[in-house]
Length: 312
Image (cartoon, rainbow, N blue to C red; front, side, top):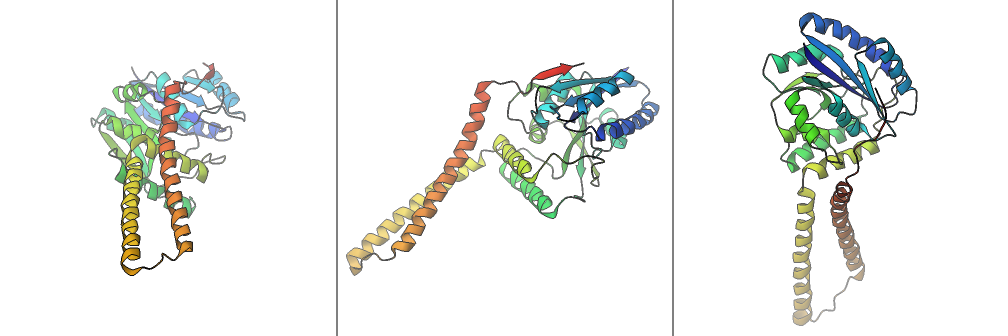
């Protein structure tokens, strides 16, 4: 028998989990009919939930011995949850999906067939629409994907979800990358391996509220850019060089004007504006350097990606 591991990161999903489990059970029956030689295990990763998520998982485990779980000592973030799930999963293939049913379990047989019958190492999903999302959020999301794909050599597909199935060798490659600052969408692209993309229309969550505010998504996008591109550092250097050249040209212009025309140099208000502008650019560039330095600082501490409170 081959083993398929299902990894489900959870944070405050007590309302969605029973619905998710019901849909997964239906999919398991369809899956077993098509692939009778494959058994399934489920790993719920409780990311320090503040509601009754952990208790719901415990109750589900009592009636289903294929369910296992890891509960964190606090909220470490979804990236830590994905890493913990991949580290614990023992399957020949591993699939990651969310508990809110925005990742339809019904796609699982098609995804499994792609990696076992078509020769892919991974089958991943991407949304072709952003129905239900606020327009401003969709706009910034598209801008982020365009920007990072121009700045980084690692390809990140627009609309890509975390919902994907992977071969054991691909999972092992991801687990081996035990960096503290994690951006899994970039890691998928960086390690390579052949991936089949399965497109579907956006599905709204079945229960509960999204955990991703605009501010959290913005910070996550900065994490992705700094993790897989050094272009901002080059940009800071280029801006510094340009302003140095402009300053030199202006100095020459002022000296020549004074010597040839004898004009005093008027316009102190405009000069003050220029000084403030250049000061702002300098602080911006220092901020870019600080962002990269902070990542280096956190990596050198060698702190664990997560801490387990309970496991079964």
